[in-house]
Image (tube, rainbow, N blue to C red; front, side, top):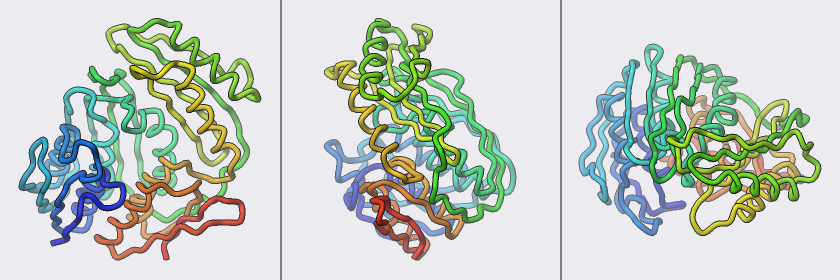
Length: 338
């Protein structure tokens, strides 16, 4: 039994999700106390419960203490089985974070799987669908697995109601080295708006253009979604390099002006472009698990986040692998297995 302090490091739900995935992969049970102890509202939220339920369903696992608000759980894994699965989170809980929990175990299963996930697709506390599909999934494909994603319906906070479909084809994950990103091939800035005044998106685009003056005028666009998919708004900035695509999101929410949202997102994108790293901070967080499953490989990233370092610590508990972050002369960090 592996005992984990849920308040360590970033102290959030990533500890729970990675522990479930690694438990199913390695066959080792675990216990987490002080679940999400580093958050303002500690304990399991609805989306964490759904993620654990999904892990239990695909892996014939059991989990004691599984309820909204629980601060301690004990998870005992079984055998992962490929199949067709449908998980509804309720509200705007992140479909992407539930996917993160079950993805690696299913990619090691005995056959292809199909997932239908309903809930939030564009949630300010998680990477949006476009990031998963265009930034994260291509790296997993490069490692040898098949993963195809389709956004059927957008789901914004707080209403949710989104739907994504995922087709998975297992394959031996092989280590890859992702240390360079190549030349930038294209850039886009798209403001999505649903059930809100279009002027919000127009102002976001105008502010983004001011902060990204080198981007061509044709790169900027407003996309109007059906009102029934809202209310919701997100600004998506995308830079496609030869080897990787970075997606930076700015989520519309009460109390934050369109201009402020756009300036912040544009500043983060400009910072990534100015570096020479392969992975931005959110991609680095998510790559550690598949790289650990592959048993090696390397990638460069910007300054590692506390999420990434916590993920590395949880991986070491289950696998014994130690992943290190080595600062390079350029300012980027090389992430590799020690």
